[in-house]
Amino acid sequence: MSKQPLAFLSTPMLPVAEDQHIAADLDVSLSTPLTLVVNAQLELADADQRSMELSLVIPRSQCRGERPLLAALLDAAQAAVARATRGGTRHQPRRVVTQVAGRPHLIPLFVAA
Image (tube, rainbow, N blue to C red; front, side):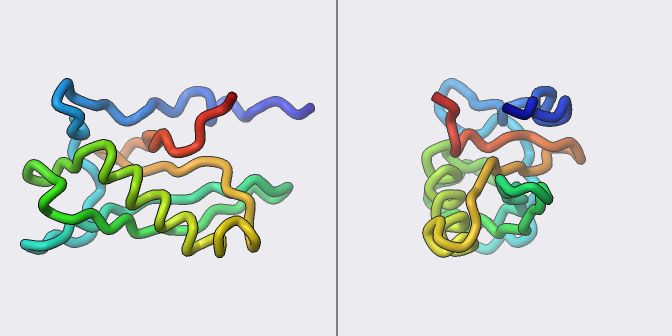
């Protein structure tokens, strides 16, 4: 069994406020009256440790300003991962990371048992 890289262990989870909105300014690539698009990176569970860029599309109705509800962010991440991996048939996902103030933060989509 291989050990997880140190970077994996040191990447913090996204902060969540008591009202369940993300408590940080995310890396937003597009903001319209109807949607918020957040940049993210899907890291794959393969020997090459490759990654894929993702765009997480969140309904503006599920946001307070530029901060989405955690549930809306998770739904958007799950949909983006499914598209990128073709439902897990093309690539095996490992984790999803987004940037907060230029630093990587984990989106808690895949929880280890």
